Length: 239
Length: 123
Image (tube, each protein chain N blue to C red):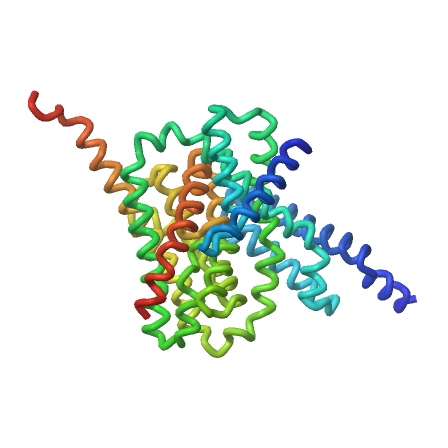
């Protein structure tokens, strides 16, 4: 009986259904919890939802690769969703026209500081040069950071981890850190800092704050992706 | 909604093709986004359907990241021996770049506001 159940669960069509359902349920539950807590940073659904899935994978002894291929339809949607970021960006174009200089300067400073601070800290703590390359692009969005890291000979899973840790840490800490550094911060500034530092995870958070914050985060994320791709060759050649 | 999804997927495909033609390692989805932005700028407006569908997609971006983050935790062995430089670069670096970006943008915006209030030269 248990064995038939096991074979049934492990058949490809079935495991897709089970794990997509589990991921959707974990997200819905943790999202409800997050809303009920009025967006408490420790209850960010990417953290709590992930923890829930990790527990399920451990309980059912499912290897990660099996889970990842089961939920590949969800992962696929990241591509079209990235394209859709043009829509909030377009919604803010009229404001950008009056703000292009501050935005360009903030982008340059933010991008250089993101790359340089990662390299300097990893180097101070004795990281190997492969570690340095793998953390350099950590503020760029996942697909950009991983392709840049592969291009410059870093460790791709490590770069993906750096991107995720950075995104989660910056999103969780953005409220207290920006309040401490800037006091009451406008949605434009908060969104821009979140999108630049915490890429899509920060943008997802900013979209919950307000449409303006979301649009500025989307803008910062895409501009920083481009800028990181342009600056990485310089950063790597200087190592 | 289906029309919008079609548009998004086709633009991503165009971006993927373009990505193979440019020498920088840029992902196709990002180039697809830039194409859509260009189209919207040329047309001067985004349809209601496009706005609604993209809003639903974007508000649930975190859902789409869960599988990735699960995978990263599962691959902890890759960086277990170098976790200190690695994790501190990520977290401290995140704080530093948040503050640097917010300060710079704020400072530039207030500087611009001051310049705009001042009367133009020669008056």
